[in-house]
Length: 240
Image (cartoon, rainbow, N blue to C red):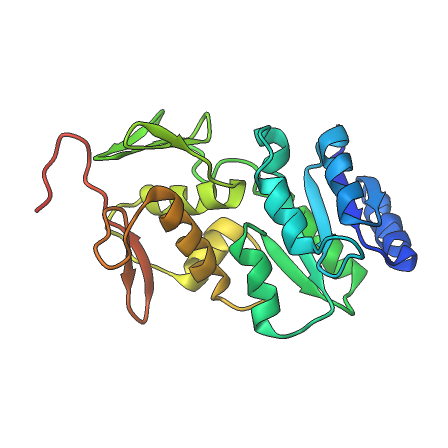
């Protein structure tokens, strides 16, 4: 089946342009003009991708994203989300990313660029590691690639699709230092147009969900001036 993209914007002309360009590429396009309508349509259609305007007339896009990520059905809460904002300040972009957005674009934008980025994001729905083991086991952490599940101290934790891919990229190579650029290439999977600090925002979210203290990490360590590495201890081993 063709991927479903939900376009959420209160400006009809923007919805019309995106519908035309996305439809020409084979996507099924749904539309919503308000945040409340968007949440209803997410529940109804289970879109693969949501293009979500920040400045909606009822509830803003960041609150819509918070509610979306809190939905009980993983098929809906895990939808990829690209925030769309008319405000160019970096803080506005990162607010959305901090609550689980996968990407952002600022107005005015090129519809062709948006389509290219949507296609690239959806391509990474496949696991990061094609020959991943059945389970990665570390002290206090299990990562299950096939089920796309993460357990911390035996309890399931709710990672978004992108957060799971980011953690998997690190877990695949314990001890290896990845730069932000390398993680963007490996996880985002395309030439990212924004700030590399998008990686920092998502690392912070992953750490919070893993209850991992950045000052004394069990799992993800910051390598200053470079990037990040996974420092979890393999199950059955002791920390050196």
